[in-house]
Length: 283
Image (cartoon, rainbow, N blue to C red; front, top):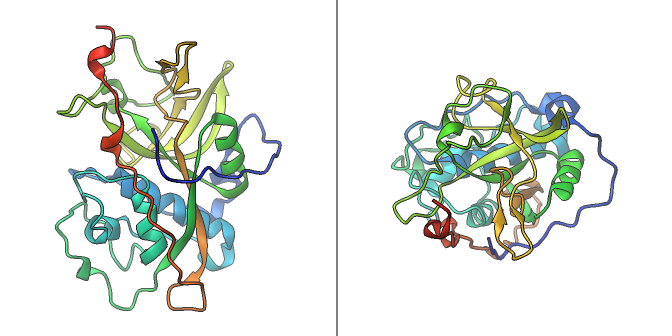
């Protein structure tokens, strides 16, 4: 994946072998697990949810239990396609310019036809100051450990849809889910931590398929994805695309306050730009 975002500058720090952001910052994880319904909204849910956590982590007393509205992204972000999917860069550009209101101000309805004017008129917006990408397992761990959850793209397989617990690894009989263009379907999740099972590393992720899926809405997914062989071809050891994981930095205040209102340039990366020719894969 090639995008216009800048790489994250992550301080060198020691991280533990296992970590759960919900345990380090328990006051920042009171929001419910979303069930996105009949709407391709993972791009909005994972982004808004990760930024909500990060605002709380930056100031727990001010933003405890903050839940930012993914519905605003579905209804108001014209650069994206609402329930038909979204772009993992331009969504951050919108939040940096316009900010997001709270879930209570604009509740999630899983419907992209809901008017942007439906959000409450007196709701304060919180804006991201910037965003950047992480491109390897070590950097992702350090960033989550220091600053909180990140939004990660994953490839979808049919066996992941019926995952119910334990360590998820792609089964040999799994079918890779693809769009009509034959590009593999990409779904966004939130990484909240990591660990290992009998020496096998995993990411602890929060999904948007409700609490009946997985381990109460969470999953342990094999880490070490998007590896390359000597010829540069992909060897997927896991479904998480660790080469393009997004981290957002909370802004300094509510829009309309004394915070700097200069908007950063919008960085566009369209999930449809991913060039994956499934016909070249072994049958």
